[in-house]
Length: 184
Length: 327
Image 1 (tube, each protein chain N blue to C red):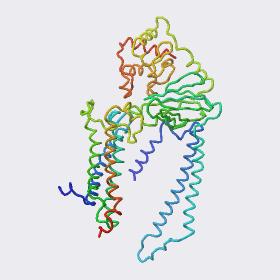
Image 2: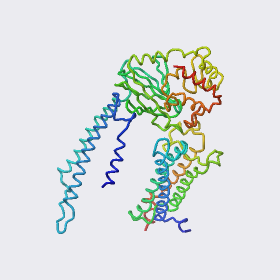
Image 3: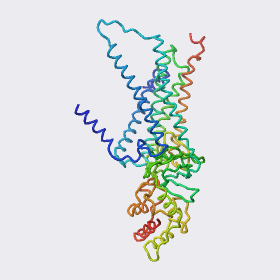
Image 4: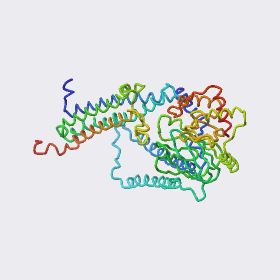
């Protein structure tokens, strides 16, 4: 267990990425299931409120793009590329591990909004992002989305962005780092 | 097999019924252009599908592994074949690209000289139409003369919306601070349904609209009606009591009735009785729906800015009588 928490091995990090992304994929699928069940007939098969429906499709889109699809590709190139090119690992294995844990943090942070309502004095449990996964202004601005919903979305995506940046540095620089003479 | 048949029948039930928003029944030059382009590309796609799948099935059948059969001859380096399968898709793409570009320019939004200009303003969650040359306004229900070129200049008062009346034209976004245009000419009289097509907040799905395409004389009658001063209720009628209720209630803060109130937040009610629908074309304009709407608008349309009104039953009946008298 501890070895998985502290691992810097690219295969293990690839697997961590894979299973975490797969978990988020299931959550996104569950959201899609509720959306479709609600649309079974006009005016609601499940009685999901308009607010909740908007949260569900916003979170479904965000989850599938940023928490499932992108990290799944991260899982594959983390695991496969060093093997393909015969490198011992990615360029910066600790940065690689850092990237995974920051990704997990970003994913949990966005999804925490489903339960964070009371922290913000909202009259409902969930303050999940609700302005669409595409996040068009002006709907995302304070005037039209006064709750913390869009803040969760923005901050969460920024955290995920740090994870992507760290990972891309760790993988792209394989061919230059370590320098060849040290790589005997 | 019976299961497959049952499933097909179930699917076919989707082909019955009325589709007021079908893009396959175009009633304007704009939507005919789009429907024609769709059919054009659809048949090219069918041709490609048939050719590719046929070749695939032939290859599977003819070149499958057989005991003792020789390896099939590879076609690598076959110049004629390679030129053929490069040229054929390129040609098909030309046949698709040319009509597509033509449709893009044809629907770019420039109406000919003398078109009737209407300014469309999107609000959360209703539509405002201003006819600058006729000096009238309309709300949610757009009235247009048949056969006349129409120019819609569209913008938004708050967030991004999108104007979409599938049988006439669209979708095109309404963006705050800029003007997007649609031009079309409706070719048959009728009532056409539309809705906002860009997610615009909690009641996006409730932001509907209707377009009434009318003969010149019917359209002119409607214009004259909208231009006239709002009806003055007769002395002692229920509507007169309703006007008093309107004057002393919160209504005047948001709604305009020419000569009575000048609120600017909600739609102008000077001729609300002449409309077929209320609440962003969401409900028919009847006593019952007006009753429910005034008593608790947010329960019918989440996020609606009009708060539940605290009106006595008698006052409410009078108020509705007044609103219905505003033809």
